[in-house]
Image (cartoon, rainbow, N blue to C red; front, top):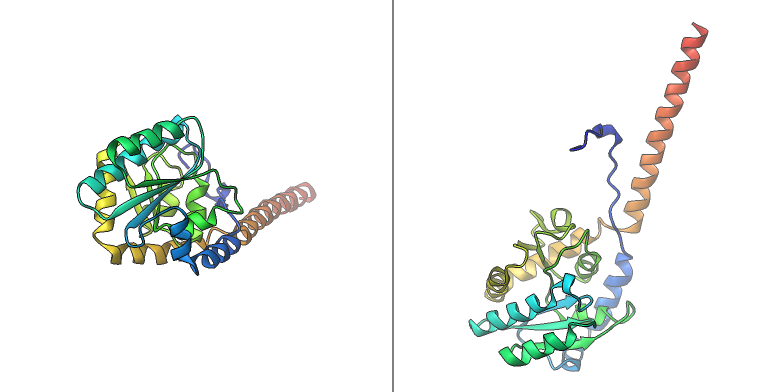
Length: 237
């Protein structure tokens, strides 16, 4: 619309994942949540934030470590689980040790494994720059509320005004830590956001995307047919 495209030519087709698969996998692992948490030496009672991505500069993994450290130092019952690998992993581990941050490192996990990490966690943090951020879809399908930066593309669709999480300023570790602290102090809100995230994920499915694509095609074909009929009628006239 901003670039002048008529509203009738705009079709919303959501980014999707296999929601049912993710949901089933998370439920399977959550049945032994204590054991899953113990796998990474996670405290059973602390609010657990998960980072899932490559340990590279554009993902800002050090922001996550520093925010968890700051929240914990302020007295919040929080901990972090970092899933992934990359050139900044050693720096993140060094930072966690230096600050005494309650952060555990799971290493690389492929898609068939990572649902276990979501099941162990209470919320996802994506404090980077993303055109979309499919990990948010994955986490919400597993029932996790999400904390994303204002430079994450899916924020307006999946988080803002949805009651499924919070949007924080990009590269603002202080605000990220303060938001983590606030969530840890209001578990009721976290649970409510979790339930809404799970519901919202059901509207970002392959079936919804397929129907939206088909509707767009039907509308375009219908217009073309109508235009053709008008042209033939004018020619006869």
